[in-house]
Length: 543
Image (cartoon, rainbow, N blue to C red):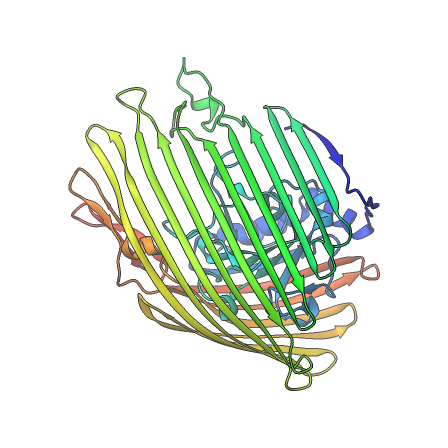
């Protein structure tokens, strides 16, 4: 798709700087050097339960080992002190490369594989280090946004735009000690930009072929103790038809499968002397035309409404010795599948899915001992799923969606970040999860990093992770008119993993270029899959 971009800069204009690291990072990824390593060492292990590989990574533009990240330890920590395999995509890189969506941004990250089923808005999955797509936890401003209504609980990357995104932190490897279920392959944390300074207004228009246009408008700023930002965006495109034109039946007209995406997001903050409060909100509405497996379908579409809300209060007491963070988040994802019947052989679809997740979290960072940061946390989470409607495939075969369930989880975790010497640091952690529908789960993690020289560091880690069975895998019920059904299995065990890795981080040209090589191994037990029974029923089992 060709594009014409018209940008109206911020009212307080600034000069964009392109440095050497940006240019080299773009060249390496554009020429496929990074992809060569990924394909050579990782492609043959995708989908297996025992995953071993080598990951060669060029750090995202503008980042280095001194970059401060939060996701790896839940506290602001330099990459060189985390002991984790971390990549950061900055706002500068997003603008330099004109990255449009979250899926676009992640395509250049080592260790991640992005799979799209069609054009813009189509189902898009991300696989981290060969694990399944539902083994990666996705967050935005601390809000978990994996879909509780999805059969596997995975997140669909097809509808997430980057208009207000300030950075994306990717932490590879199992991170269940800090984040609980679903964090086996990686954690991807999206952060939006807080307003600062005088009022700024920014607008952008992108237009191209296939009737594509993308408009964005935002205002942001700060005054006294308050900061604010508000962004609205609209993206529309006719796209292409989904079926391969080579297998189209003769005489069938082509039907472009259009996509529309509307997003509104906001971020409001208040800074007191010892307390700061923040509010995050994001609402996405999307609609995408779809087709049948081998033919065009002129009226079938999928639509979704996604609402993410979070509130956070941070404190700093006793001269900074105790720094608590209280947060409350809400995720609501509604999906609708619609298809009218034009002929007797077409499918009639009227299915609705609604998934919700509420989470209360209290994190306490304690600076009681020199060179130690102790983090103690408690989390309470509730998930809900509701699936209803029917799909009439013709010939009397009708499938119904009849699922309405919820569950709760309570967890505590403990982590200690230790600076042993100026060159040696370590992180130790343990977590205990107690969920309604399966036995409790305990996870451990230990990571260390050593500075051989100012430009060379080695790191090693061992971590455990788990994925809780989705509500659909446990309790889903999808009967059909032929007297058989899919029924969830309430006796499922969680999937569990053991991960170890050994890495080398090396800087070149006085720190202008950062490279990283990692040897890792994932061992996953009790994978959940669907099986068909002799009775023609189906269910989920551990393998």
